[in-house]
Length: 111
Length: 311
Image 1 (cartoon, rainbow over the protein chains, first blue to last red):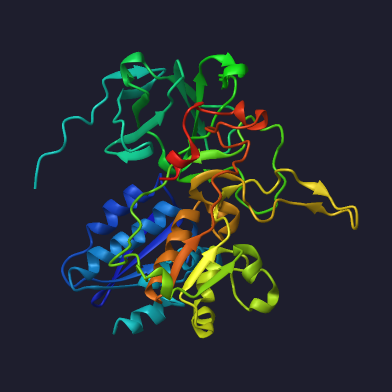
Image 2 (cartoon, rainbow over the protein chains, first blue to last red):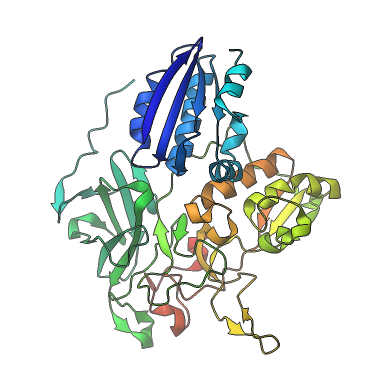
């Protein structure tokens, strides 16, 4: 699992690649939560995410809760069909705005 | 803010695995800081061993006998540290008397599933023929117990006001005419909630949704040669575990989240979920039953009753 962070205007794009599961989610949590100040606007770019387990889905919701309680905004971009299916079937997707691409996501967050 | 708990550190080690005495309640496997608390009740077992597998492995990664000090009354309880939560399956070996005349059939050679398991793996996809040589078929798994229910609560609609629709999870949406994405699953029912509301019902009673063995008593159809399965599921393997084969995400081990998401959405739409249960019918794979010889060799205890398990 690799994380790349890019600042584009007022939005932070966090790209997570590889596998997000019980063994990698704790490190991802540490790295992503460190980026979340008050009013943070985050695009989670999952375009190159290959696999997400239950722990990964929980991390997404944790990020959502942290951001929204600090008046920020977050959306998911680039979900592949399999991961989107899993998040949809388990209800996790209900919490998020979803963009097809990072560019679409940036536009949705006003950037 | 408070300082961290001080009772979350190992006190002993077994084959490199760090342990401490567990808490008796709740029964089952529960997350605690740094580890998992395993607690199991047996009135007549003389010894108990926790058997840990890596997910899907044929052989256990370790078998840990409960030290005598970790047993209080009829409860064996132990905290195991450092387990990889999503990648662990567990069961028990219970030792005790073999005296069928008096109802005792303990056999420590068998690995028993935890009667309190909240997730059960090993049969993750409906109708997929299992490996019959597997030494442990229905495998207790660890679950995250942090589903975000938000403000959800039971609707408590008076029983005289219920308009009940009974359905089988698979049959309800399996046909392509259902027009949905996740056919034959808990998620599929969630997709059909608008339809249920249109019907005017306010209660959805689901035929057995807990883990059962669709291959139990399976037979070949004399008409067309097809394998006929235990379709209805009135033969429980684990009362606390949603059936993985009914979940679109069962192959990912996320059937608990999927089922809870369905319950939450039904509540949100004013529909009371009910589940059909027959506690008198229990699968031979349910490790904790009294009952006929076919099931008794896999039991945890001779005295625990179905009524106690389903409280």
